[in-house]
Length: 267
Ligand SMILES: [Cu+2]
Image 1 (cartoon, helix red, strand yellow):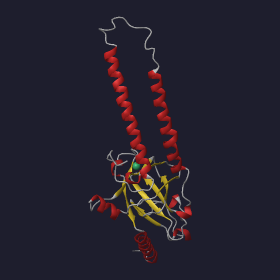
Image 2 (tube, helix red, strand yellow; image 1 turned 120 degrees about the vertical axis):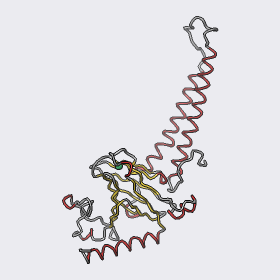
Image 3 (tube, protein in one colour; image 1 turned 180 degrees about the horizontal axis):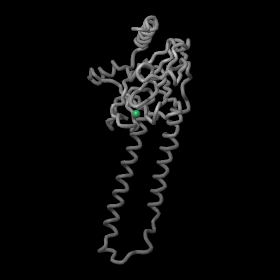
Image 4 (tube, protein in one colour; image 1 turned 90 degrees about the vertical axis):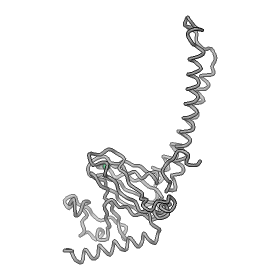
């Protein structure tokens, strides 16, 4: 089905299924709306006062409306059990293996997104609450841990390789936030004390989307989708989807920066 509902541009592999689900729900709800609306109008006319000065205590004898009710319930059951629940199960039960995916830890806080990559060793370094510094080290990463030396962190900038399963481990430092990227058809709450996984495969690079939309300034945005305080409106991050080579280059550049920073701690 084409995008007759005017939804945001699509940029993930599973998003099409979600869009067709949303479209079908709208089609069925429209049929219901027209059906019940016509029935209501018919009743207003059919049982008007001038024709029925005295109430009829027997009511309708035909079973048509019962059959219609059963039909509506059946369609809704098929929508729910045939489409919605299997689609949901595929999102939350069948996560990609960590070895096949890029794992990114995303920690929400008022009012920013802290992004943490494990780096080339694929092991996330130790973090310690005592090392947390709002400016210098918002995640409290212990750089003396060997596994932490190559860990890359960014603020509000999520870089992803195209056509790769992305496994986001979502956390929150303070209250409930929600990681929402409309183009990926992904939205997941971040809850303090929990690490919640969510995954998707972005399949359109930022550059490709810019040329598709004819908008050179287009950016995928992480919108916080839960009202989380006074600064909620400015809690947004950006996702840059890169080609596989460009992503590798970005990782290498970040590694270089880490090395030079470690060599010269006063810089
Ligand atoms: Cu928030």
